[in-house]
Length: 161
Image 1: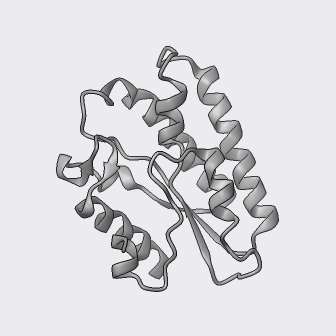
Image 2: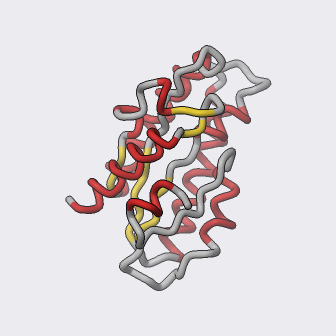
């Protein structure tokens, strides 16, 4: 049983490790489109950046623009097809020398998500403010049990405000 499900029993978790923006469409297919009492919480983009920039210069903004397009298309799809609330999450900075070269582009991505949330009036969970210790990660980028608790608590805190 996932950490979030243990602590918040009315929560369904469809996220999967290593998922990218394109994978979210399949995850969304499991959600009732007409339930306006549901909330879709999206924490996406980090894996896209790691994957798409693997063979590109980290300052190539054209690569990021393509990720932004996929993100925008996904959120447009959700706003058209789902009646529920949407909460966005920015991405965290895993404490790893392997990820360090990506920090600048992750920062640009987080600024994009923050501006998007403001412009589209979505709530935003700033995971980067809380996921800031190596003990919060496993397998370099995935949240550990402690990290998962922090993430779920921040999401639920936002939901209750």
